[in-house]
Amino acid sequence: MGQIDDIRAELGDLDRTLTSIEAVVDLPAKRKTIEALSEEVAAPDLWNDQDHAQEVTSRLSRAQAEVERVSGLRSRLDDLSVLVDLAEEESDPGTVDEVRREISRIQPEIQALEVRTLLSGEYDERDALVTIRSEAGGVDAADFAEMLLRMYLRWADRHSYPVEVYDTSYAEEAGIKSATFSVKAPFAYGTLSVEQGTHRLVRISPFDNQGRRQTSFAGVEVLPVTEEADHIDVPEQDIRVDVFRSSGPGGQSVNTTDSAVRITHLPTGIVVSCQNEKSQLQNKAAALRVLQSRLLDKARADRAAELNQLKGDGGNSWGSQMRSYVLHPYQMVKDLRTDHEVGNPDAVFDGDIDGFIDAGVRWRKQHA
Image 1 (cartoon, helix red, strand yellow):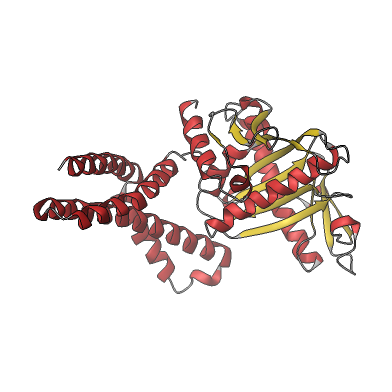
Image 2: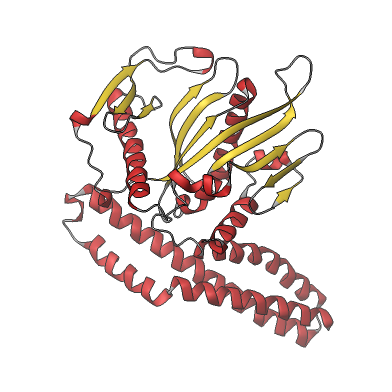
């Protein structure tokens, strides 16, 4: 029954990993938090302050989901141990196969949860605000930026994470100049912050009639979404608000009214815009949220230079280029910090980037 011994060894490794996860999560403390938040939610006057009520209910939901996830994995792992004993007693190959199938399912779930426990930064639990910009490379760079935008949106869709696109600036010939969107999920910022930096694409340019190889670049910036407790004050006299007509690909107008909003923060020169909401008021509110995230990041970078994972220093500390996507003369995507690589760029551009994210989170923890 050598295979039973191998299975027990695998289960032992998974048990040790899950035990360390349980210690970090601290389930007893988390359950006390759930109890306290449940009492707050039950208060009859909770919704008198809607912002506070949403914050409390969101925290409760996240805490409950985390406890259920860890407890569920522990229950499944315990059940597997019982099933292995049964397979050994009855010498049943069918039960052994069933155990192996369940191990193949539970192993990546425990590994993903282990990566989550490495996210302990000040803002890691928050939603993420992502901006993608085309850089050197002309129309190829704009097309590459749009490929990256689709990649992240597909990644979010794979995980059923809600996304809100605030602004898309289309390039004239193809692709985008920039796009800003938020990913609304627990630890979205901590997870996606390792994607920040310069991405490089090498391929035969579809826009070059001589079929020459082209190298192009796009930048990814990741910020935490601000919360009420951040106290980012933006006085009206410190901003200039301009309205304009939304535009789509090729410069075509997609709106017959001046509903798009551009906000300039006069003290810092930071400019943000939003054109994807239906009304000018909604676009202004969304643009202010983006501005607050940028101001929070600036204040944090000014306050503590050693927090080098943040916008002002995050990409530079890893070098200007953090990942290469090569489509010609061979096919490969390689992270230049972690050396994690795959030979299927199509899958990566279709949102299969969890391997890169996990490797990035582990790499950052080791180099913190």
